[in-house]
Image (cartoon, rainbow, N blue to C red; front, side, top):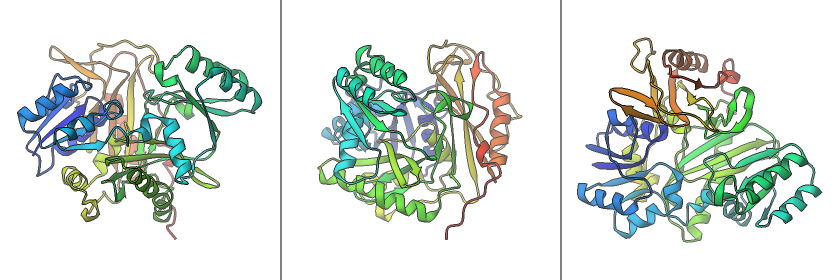
Length: 430
C-alpha cells in the first residue's frame, strides 16, 4: 500500500515512524515533511494548501491512502477535495471539521446534543463583548472562534486582562480572522486530560488517555503553546471513567455529526476538564494531537495502517486495537528560544545520533530542516524527545537524559514534564 501523509511536524514524524513498521505499507510520501521524516520516507515539495498539487501527485503515484496531520487542511476542505475525486483519505470533511475549526460551532453543537461543557456566550461585536466582561467577575476564558495554532484561548484573571484580550482578538486582530468572533466561557477547575479516539462515523474506539502540557513554563505558567510535552496513559483515568467519557462525550459527538449528515472518518479528540461535576469538554480537535501523537504511537501495539483501513471502510467495530501493557511514555518538547513569540531559525542541532541516548527513546522532529549535511532548527517547536519506561520515573529520566544529549543554541524546554506522576500508581478500577 502506498501512503501519502500531509504535514511536516512532530505528529507526522511519529505517524510515519509507526506506519513504517506496517506489513501493509510499501511506500510512504510526505508533503512537505522535515529533516527527521526524510530519513524514513520521501519528502515531497508540495505545500499543504495546494490541494490540486496533492491530488495530482496522489493520482500519479497511485496512492492508496492519504492521511492528513494538521488541522488547517481539514478546515479548508482537503478531504472533500480528495473524496470528490474518489481518492481514499483519512480525516473528516470540511463540514465535520467545524468541530475544531469553529469553537462557536462546537459549543452550539454540544448544547444541541447535550454534551457537557462550560456555559458560554458568543460575540461578533467588540463592544458587546466588553460590556459582558464589565458585568461578570473573573476569571473568564476568552477564545477566538477560529483556528489559532493552540494559542487562541486566554484565561483572564482580571477585568483589565479580559478587556485587553478582547481588544487584541477583536480589534487589533492579533490572531487574524480567527478573532473576528469570540466566545467567553465560565472558568472550569480540575485536572485536564486528552481523549483521542478512532472513528468511522459510527463506532468510536478510544486510545489510551494522555495529558498535554500547554504552557511554555514549568508549573503551567506563561502563555499557551501548541504543547510543550505529553505523557500517557494518565494514571487517574480508570476503565469505568473511560466508559463514562465515551458514553457522555465521544459517542454522542460521533452520532450527532452523523445525524447532521457530516462525514467523519478519522480522529476525534476531546480535551476534557475533570470537574467535581463530571467531565466537561474544553475543546474538540478533529485530528491527531501534537505532541500527544508522539506518546500514542510508541504505545500502540496494533498496526496503524490496518486500523486506518478499518476506519476508511467503515468497519471499525471489527478492529482489535491493542496497547502496550505496563509501559509509560513521556514526551519532552525542545523549542526555539523565544517561542511561542518571536524566535530565530537555522541553529545546528547536535547529538541526534548520540550513543548515550537510552533504549526505547525516540526523537521526533517537529521544526527541523537540512542545511548541507547538518540538521538545523526550522520552527518554534523543534524536537519531541520521547521515551518508554516501565514506570513514569524511568520514562521521565530517559527522556531528560536524551534531552541532555541533544543541543542547539537557545534551546528551551520544561523540566517538570511527568513530575506529578513519579510516585503515583493507577487508581483502583473498582
